Image 1 (cartoon, rainbow, N blue to C red):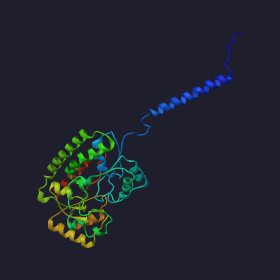
Image 2 (cartoon, rainbow, N blue to C red):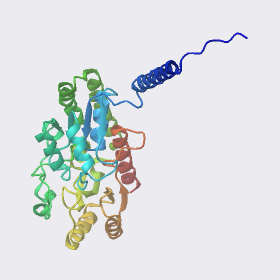
Image 3 (cartoon, rainbow, N blue to C red):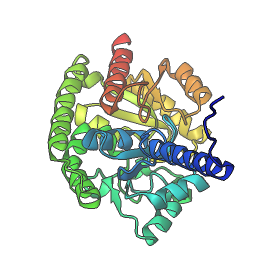
Image 4 (cartoon, one colour):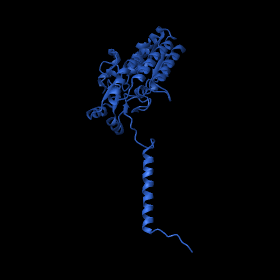
Length: 319
């Protein structure tokens, strides 16, 4: 009987070992080519708030990895940086912050990142700021741990200011990441100016003399100045939502609302709804929630501003 000669066992082991090594190498190559499991090589931009995150995404598209530190709807005055936030800030190619002490709980972490060489773009350094009136700073301003100074930090409430800021933001992104931002920046600025005209049309459904409202804290000054509203007062008479109103201040606000025929109180998540409802009951007013820093699910900054304006105007028209 004819038999086929068998290879020596040492040779079989060698071939088998080679096959295993080749298989491992092949799997390794396949893993490196799998973009879903490999590292993101795009530039990393960290924005402090959802609004700023949305605006920077509008400028860079998918050419940068944009991370937002604060959860959607979080009060920027109260948010505190975690250890993870501090680490992410130090790894960023660029940090985008509002400034004027708005993100007081993140400032130390940002400062440490800057000390390590991370560049920072501060929005309030690139817009025309609104000075606070003395009473807007509130009796509690001296006790606050925030460095707002005499300027209002809530600049995103005016889309024109955001449009004015976009070219400088685009230049900073290009300088730090090499991304060509010019086409998207131009389109974003154009959309924001169109948005402003659209919002004014909605505001004009209410006579300007009747556009009076009370806010949760002094957060709507830029919005009011842009669209012709009058802010009668605030439940928390401070530029920061971390303040508190005394019984006397609330009584004065109630009397002012009655005198000025103001029937709408717009509150943010950090405002005490119970206090606002009690005030509304005494002043014959209604309470509405204002999405001043909450991007709608699947939406944009522009959608947030449309929702805000529609909600305020709807409440005013309801009387």
